[in-house]
Image (cartoon, rainbow, N blue to C red; front, side, top):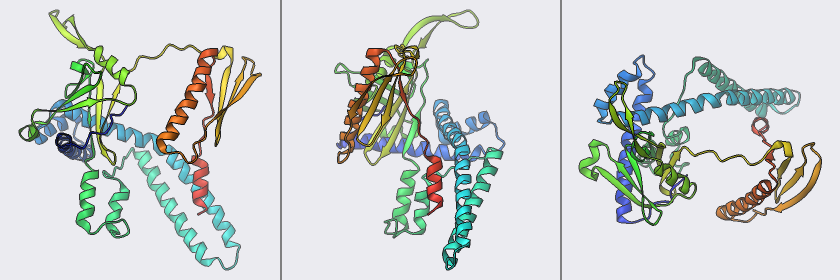
Length: 371
């Protein structure tokens, strides 16, 4: 779910400046926490120290910790696939070497292929070692941009200062605001309020360090999410206070509802905000006992086939999908229309849609090894 880019106005510029300041502090805390977690210090000990050192709240520390853990988990989950890809590339590279060794006049090419094989083997060894030890390596700002400083002209930089400006921006281009179901509007630090015109106003609470410059809260008005806007409104409406009792048996009031977490991002399109919330599952209306609808994606159309519960073909049809020469938005619109047609067919006959899941990682690794 994403908000449309903020308009280019003085007020919007102020909001983006406040967002950049927030992101700068968040990035500094995140990088410091990543380094500190390599020590034997406990999380609670680090939390107390970071709150005092950076002047942040416990909620902001939790947001940084959750975001960092998410990156770590993503790297660890992806690593077995990357190891398998490297092994495939090494195997293919070795076969290429065996073929070149039998051909005369291939000494130069053979030498380069041997160098390439050695690089792949070193990468594999390091990755397997990290996987075994549970080590996670992160380059905040991306490895590609970091390496650009060693060849400034080729990467379009006048001098090192220009590169460093981009490097600093890339390391502070986003921040995460963690939500909770027991907080007002599902979030303590960023709250969305519904306006009469169905648009939202976001109120972001600034860290204490920036209150003098930007105020305690920064507002972003006229927010319309391009996807799931109604789901976000429903999540906001679920927030309410109910009577409860403490463990000691004393009456109290507590808040229940849906948690809404926000991620503010600066990219080439401007300042954007993404939000995640729990969505109630839709009641299933299809059954495999009735059969299925198979969809095959082709270059210029979708091939749709309906089968009965025994797998016998009932009917087939073609949904034209010409995206060649179209803009990105036009292609998305055409794909959306085709998907709606297939979904309407599924809903009408109560049969689920089946789509082939293709994995080209192995093929990609083999092709890269030959070049």
